[in-house]
Image 1 (cartoon, rainbow, N blue to C red):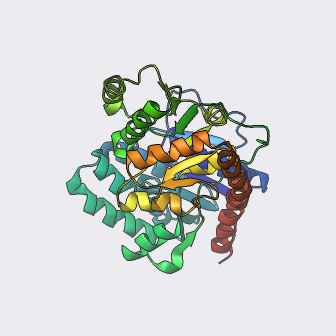
Image 2: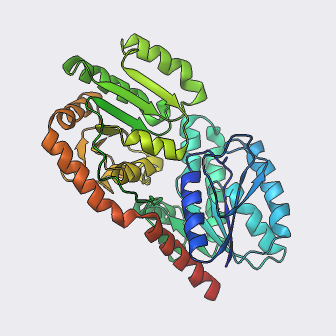
Length: 376
């Protein structure tokens, strides 16, 4: 098959980890794959890609950026010849494909909902609240106009069906998938706890610092490494907050690092962190890639008991799940940090469980959806 994977993000956006992995596996299955993304001058985080990268101008959040990407994508798809167009939210990736179909394209269309991007955009302030309802209405129209819809979780399917998407169209493929690697020798560094992912107040990242402040008083030598980009609007806030908590000598922010480097850093963690709180659909439907990669890296995981984590992890088996507050989170970190046997058992069980989320397994599930809609 000739396949296009489309998303209005840059090559170094964290969401490209899934597109990169999926494209590689589809090529391994004998397909010709293009990955169509937002133009960027950044050095790519992925090496030796076996697929073709097509870059178009655009912007992930904002009406104008969506319009620019959509317009250029329509021009490209109108003259292209694909068997399947696999478009990932936001809808600037799928709307041009739907218009190209009206103009004669025979490509089968898959809309991949890996998150409730409109809801999160309104919550974070990057999308005006008064546009939220209109954009979600348009998203549902796009979803129902496709041949198939991929949902990242059963909770995502439930929300989409409630909003008016045909249940028959929605197929659940859980998570982004991870590349399984040999990590038997990974033990972590004593006293190092770490977080990998985007850092912002909208993601409750300040709660990790509050929990670490409590932990630091009990375990004076502990260090915290936060790996990932800090939201541009929050950079000053986090720098000042670390100073206010008296943690400047104990907390490291790495900023953005490439995917392989991030994996190498998380293998150093003695305890790996994931914190979320609050009952929001856009978080509840998620299956965070970092959780699967923590598991694949043989990490000892401490997370809050939240739908997005409860759907993957089991408390006391492959992770410690705590209440959604900094004090309880600090208690969980302390326990995992100091109890070596517990730490070892959680690592072992996480490694044994991650096989069901392998990149190869999930990519085959996606390819079977392609085969069904092309042959049907």
